[in-house]
Length: 312
Length: 315
Image 1 (cartoon, rainbow over the protein chains, first blue to last red):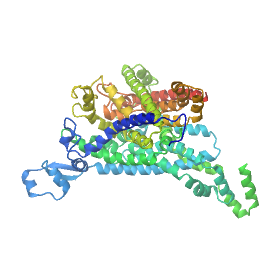
Image 2: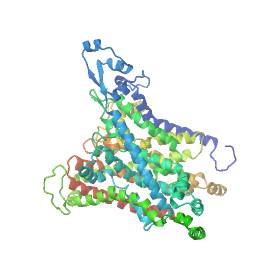
Image 3: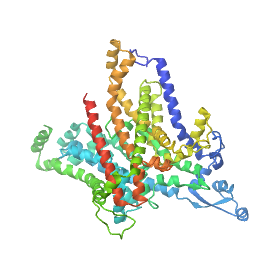
Image 4: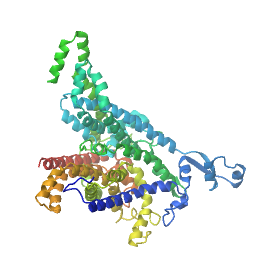
């Protein structure tokens, strides 16, 4: 790090820059840390004034998130001592656990719709990207632009006819409908990103394979795919994050069986308003996988968010 | 060139092997590979678009399936373009767009410039800063309503801590004068890293030799900044603005969770307004015309902008 250069920042400059950036990072992280902390607060600690930084952690928020509870009489409570640790938590409020809440189901919907649509869009996207990268296709640039332009429509505008179409086809509030929709929306991203990744693989590899007697399919399958593996993986994570975070289509086109977590989490209601610890617990569980993925993706982040327009 | 090499190799090999080399023709494979994508995008994007255009000339309403659908010509378009409320919505959108872009460009560029000083741990902190933009806007927006609560909210508490204003005396999302800024703040918090990352790529693309040459010519750091750094990063910055512009013109999830368009209609951005017309008032025909107008606007503005961007790149 000590190599001599007339243009490298001086030690003081680096120190000032570092301090400012770290300061910004801490401020920007504060709301996220607050979400995680609120998930472990009791409802009264969560709405205390002044806001509590130090508090006694409890799993109430998580218990409330996953269960539904009913109030019971003193006799009933006395006759049925709590069996598990989570029942014990609820007993403080003279409540018993009536059953699981709908959060688990909504979360699973997010997982199913996210993973299946990601698989489909990456699968179709890889094929199309390979063809766009390697073959002469009439109107190639126009087709690529058409694929991109489908992303410029406001989701609400697209949702009007989709709503009618889904109703006519019986796809409203079904997994199949949402998977199809997310696959199509993600496909434009997948094709653009993957074309960039495949463009970077030298053609000579496949040509050598073709001369060795491979068919086009074999060359694609055995030579190009392994080379593009990192690109395909990062594209898949981008598609997954999009499907995971999507809200507009989900809130308009699903209401029950196929509803994903983003439209559900804000509707978690406690006594007299939103149950903030439960909302925060749900948000924490929901956001954590994305945080992990972002850290995994950090090298390809820029490429993903700009549709491959900027590569590092 | 390479094709003929393959042909020659194929001609020299026994027939059985030659058939395997050729297999399906490239052209057939190209179509097999591209067709499903094009088909799906036609089905989910173009077909609905055509349907929307058709609906936009009618008075169709989803909630009245038995009512007779009338062809109303351009009346929907005429009503939208002369509607005062929609112009108010457009103003709210413009306020949101302009301020989020200005703030994100300034802060994002400054951060990128600082990170490019290459201090220890810069990669780690970059990843930390990037986190907010990857999260679900709806879930995050919902949680910000908690941070914005008067008295108990963290945001109000921090503001009062530094300014001495009573934390229960103002409500970011409840007051007409503050709500437009509340959404600007959250969007800036969330998307500044996006601009930052793109600027950083721009800064890193500048060859150090240019600075070294400038240093030899005794150009002041100030001069170097304005004649080297800014012009070289400009195409990247413009690209970031294009992306943010399109995304924020479409903005729905974050703001609908934060303010729901309120109080009154001070933060009712076009997408929220459109949702109200289409899925609350169920004026399907009218909303379709509205959607078409929005699409044409985004598409038109984006095309003009891309032309300008290409001009800057050519320089």
